[in-house]
Length: 109
Image (tube, rainbow, N blue to C red; front, top):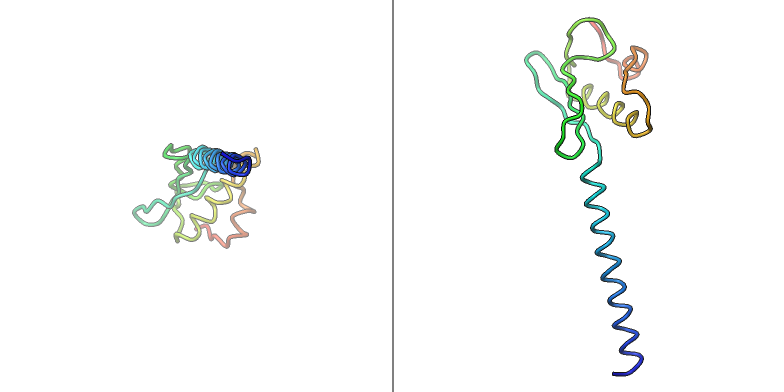
């Protein structure tokens, strides 16, 4: 076998190992990625914060306010869920403040 053929085989093996490593890394990252999911309730919506298939938080009511009021729309629920995920991903507390709810135009009855 010529040295050019050996070199090409070496490059091919390197690329295969690199792609396999990237694939495995992606599987691990996807398995541990956090995301929000809307939950439909009687009279409104809530959200779950998930990591892979594991439920981390179930929020059936608008956080940061007194009482038990669900979100009026799916869009509101997912917007706050994304805020909570963003906070968790940056090491912050997942507590949602009333001022943050105002940014999403969430009305409290």
